[in-house]
Image (tube, rainbow, N blue to C red; front, top):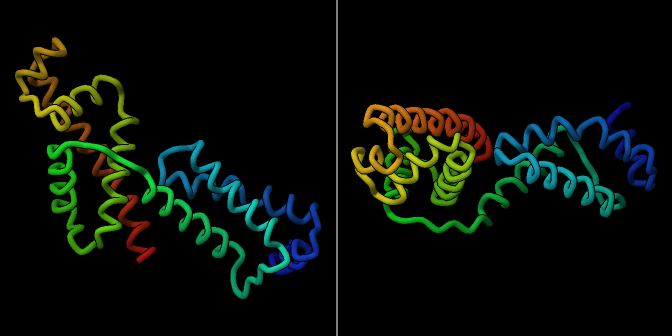
Length: 187
């Protein structure tokens, strides 16, 4: 169905047109949101909020250009607002790691709000790591343990600690690359 026709029908409170719009874009928008949040339930909530907003404001929505772009921009903006609203507590070791990653990835040109988004995203990535990797990472960067202390605490070798930290850093850098691409297109 033609996007302009869908919007016109939605402007007239046509439930079937709205349902068609939802079915057409929902999965794609959830995937798009999840690229920002790495949190599927939150991504689904944000996309549902966008559709609720569209339905509640159906009489006043006027889309001049692409419906697809309009929806993606709404989702992106809500994702960025969600990330900014996260309240995070941490100690300076993790802040130093974040600063280091920002520097290594040539992110110094990003504004402070973007750096906060990156920081919050790193925390989400850490929470998604396998248990052992997460434990090693947190002991090193949140508790300030040395390699030998981590190895003793977790009853693993120092090489295992180094390998887990290397993998964790790789995972973070890989995920941050996607976020950087999205942020560079946003700014």
